[in-house]
Length: 635
Image 1: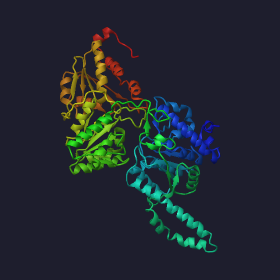
Image 2 (image 1 turned 135 degrees about the vertical axis):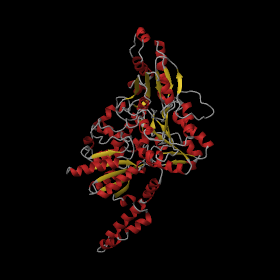
Image 3 (image 1 turned 90 degrees about the vertical axis):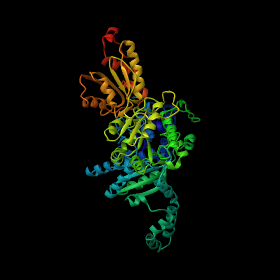
């Protein structure tokens, strides 16, 4: 008989006997595996937290007790247990369930989290608010060991330890971020694991002493004075206890009795507690256990053997970046590559293998990565920071203060710029132009295809200033690659097509669909000039002024937020140059967060595919020829 079929909310879960929970966890793991096999998504992290999720909802009165998950891509079991089982087939699809947490989906999703390392800060805020309101519920933050490498997590722990508020932090230690965790903290946690021998020894001695009639208690009291010295002999000093936290663990994250006992103990402690829970990424599914990185995020696959159904063999922009980085490193020994916990995700795995001394993986620490790059640049190195566009937002102040202010030649390779496939509103790279072009000394460019990407990277690595190259996630267009890398003239656009009825400036991934749209317009009788802008900063003002010297119509197209983006930059230039009689249309992302969905579906919904661009341009550049032919309606 299935237990999971009768669990529609955590209150149903809490009606079960503790002895039934392992069976429920087994059913839940099978359910998660079956769902991800069909829909694709995050697998390793979700399989690793099944027992932990069950135990949390069993031990705590959610949603009255607040449960704050870090990142959110480990919450598939949480979604199933909180009433969303029937909708899991829509996971990450447009209009379906988010692959992360979403407050609009459920009251159990207390905090939305797409970026790492935010849970402890948010949970501390919830705990402070609880005390201000005179309430008594528990607040629990679940954070992975990879997310603990970010300074923000320690800033929160420092404050929590100082305030002494009742707060429970569950450190899910599976030695994984999106790749195996790195750094001193990871080494420390391994040493804590080794310290289990000390903890067992201490408990054994305590039991023996208490059996001694009349003197056991006295000897035990004296022994407490020696405990710190003994502990130091077996394990390093407790980092978490020094920060003001009671430390419990390590706890086997797949042993239900151990988890429940730890949570019950933590609930009785009047102050901040950290529970070190050790789990296995991919638990219960051999392909994911053996290759947790490969199954961190996956396309649909065959559960029997793990073979991907639609993995495909298309080359990605990430691969082109990685190969170009290697070529650049071969010709310039000063080039040092930096990534924040994503050597595979950013295409730098081969670079790390070939140039281990010139490769730095900082863990989930984007702020540190940026300032680390600044330090390298100060000593004459050429740092190349590879990061997803959305994650670089976390290092904005460091870009301003530590790179641009000193005008240092740091190159930022912004992967997954624009709309991305099936993740979350937090993961689209739609704001980088806005926050980068506002900074003096920064050069911002975007390639229209993979061939231009390699030349832009070569250009950026030659500049004496900060530079960012933004490029999309996903497959390349398949254009031929030039054998030799060349440096592009900075701030110079490229005219791809000439026409008499108006001008269209497109940037990056929108150039090709814009060309397709304009070619269709030509068949309707409208001849438009198409410009591959290449640079969002600096703009090719000479070309712009020449095209609009006598007024006219201009449209801009970008896969980026319209507020402060490429189109805004063009309009600012038109105004600053005093160009009169200019009418403008800016196509891009409106002032709202974009939901999850496939790139194809999202571009269509936003009117940024070739068809959508065609209809918007047709309306704007309407001419007598177009009107004579009659308009079409978008199907």
